[in-house]
Length: 496
Image (tube, rainbow, N blue to C red; front, side):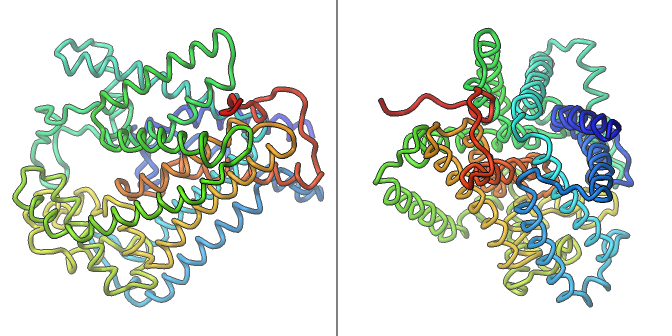
């Protein structure tokens, strides 16, 4: 029992360190781990998962049930995801088994892509086991430490951009980006002029590239915001300062993903606090009609974009941005692929194997597209949008299934917050960043196409744990604590 308790404490500490390491995703990692290899947090999370598995196995042998809430929701969500992946793979088994591209075969890519998803689900299970009731110590504070490191390094990077580079910056930068900064492109032997000549003036801080930082920053921001309401005195002042500095970094980084998620967070919090999840739990009667109006506005924007899509393509083709042209070309490729495989897609991880066949002619005007399709060691073709990837690889079932997961989690956490308020207390602060993160996951699918982002799965685990714990309270299995612990700290009521 003593060994198990010690392992639990070690797991908690390793988890916190892994959260701090999340934005450090460009280290010189082990290539055998594929797309996870350069993520420093992966090695720490994997270690924590291994120790957690040992504890779980020991408890199972001893006949002890895992009573920590949230596991059922994560297991059911994971089972649904795995079933969809499996059905799609079986439906396309013949094509997957015969697929080859750049020295890789379709079956191996299916396995590695599915492994990333399973890793994410394991991270969700680990999260719900670690953070519940200890939100500040093991999730919020580590995210704040990580944000502070980004701010500090971002200042050094900004000085370098201004021509005032410090020797310390060059040394640390070479270590943090050893897995991404190569002066010679391995696939064609030419110089990496983007790196050598410094074409990209955006800030990436400790991350692989500016969009990677923007993605982390947008998902981290709600927790920095929540920290202000959970702390007091000097610590509260420090959190306010950090939030302001981190917000300034997001704005100054020029990473569009960061801007998009920051706007999403501000809008989501405003809608929650004043309309859909007031701190006192008294929801306005107008919430339903306003919600319907917002949904109508979203649908209208989608229809407008679809109607003007040909014009968007024309502007990208005649424009000067290679990045925009590449992004649009691969997304059109995804749409073409989806139109032929609308229900179950071509199979998880199979986009690149069919990209050449569905690429529009104007897509080859992009040097990035030509390199990724021609050279073995070039960056692997990607869709630049998770929704485009889901549509192409898992069809309508995968696309709507993924969106449904996050909408359902938003509904569940909101309902749990209102239930808690009905028990005589206000809505806990942590409900807000969880829902804001769910909104971020939905929005970031427009600009990124990966499942490996740790904060996606941490959000799933945190939301499952919070909802299940409140369910226990409502069912009488537990009683609300009278102590002001972080999970029961509140925002000031929006009404007098």
